[in-house]
Image (cartoon, rainbow, N blue to C red):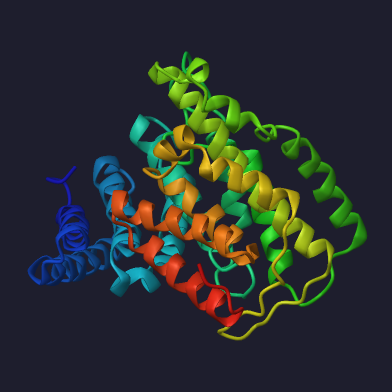
Amino acid sequence: MLLQFDGLKYAVLACGASHTHLVTGSSQMNAAGIMYYSRAVSKVNQALTNIDWSRDDYNVAVLLAITFLYIHGIFAVDTNRDIPKHVTGAVRLINLRYAQSRKPPMARPIHRIIWESILYQMFRQTVRHPFSVDFQPDFVFWDRAESVLQSLTFPDASPAANSPVIGFPLSLQKLIIEIVPLCKSPHQPKPEVLRSLQHRMEYWESTVVEDGQCDKEESPSHVCTTPADRAHLFHQHSTSLYILAASLLLDWVSRSQEVSYEAEPHLPPPCNSWQIRRALQIMRCSQAHEELSRCYLGSWPSLIFGYAVDRPEHVAVVRTDLDQRFHKMYSSEELLFLRELESVWRTRGISS
């Protein structure tokens, strides 16, 4: 596909150079990343002026280039603010492909990766600032993507293996994306809406890693030795963290916390809820943390827990988690999350 579209080549080079800059601190790599990023944006803009839906490989290459453009914003602080517009563009383009292309929406495995990537990034941008109004999700696209992704690319594999990008259940993701807009709204949610969300959340809360399970997993008799065991443990713990973060947000909404439409959100007060206690147990679990710290999925729950913690020892857990994620993945988002939380903690007079 790199041969099909120069914009994809430049987007891949941009991501590689900017990631190398984060790892090495090389100013040359930073400059190269921005240069290739600019070239990729230019090529994508040119391609979008004349889309031919009969050229499937070329169109897939254009879509992939756009996904790499928003991925570049994950690596590079300079282009992080561009992520929402690239996600919006990707949603529009894949909607057009769905409507106008004669090919099925998931003819090849690469199509699943693209659909999941765009869906996940739309989710990520929606929940990135849960207490201030910015990115607006496209729920029509959401429903379409959810329907498309019901078909399994690998029928004999587990549901988790059939979700190479998102990695946790779509129904949970949908629940979270319904809760977050309520956090952004200055109005109290309707009681029936709240009851429905709470009812659905009760199911997910019942699936969270049990209290004390992490202590059992630390014992020699529970050490995971096979890849399948480690994958199961990772999926269980990462999903639990998302559930706990969403449950915490829903509790905040239930207490009718107001939010700000200004640049600086008015955050809800810290708390020492059961969700925080359970989340900190999971984050301290050495077996789970080794895998979680290497995966981009865990940083958003850490951000939510960071808003809530009010004890120095708990702040230290969240800070260490995000710091270790950065040094294992070298993603600028972890730096931005940590920078945001450090400001919150300083304002609250919390140190560790």
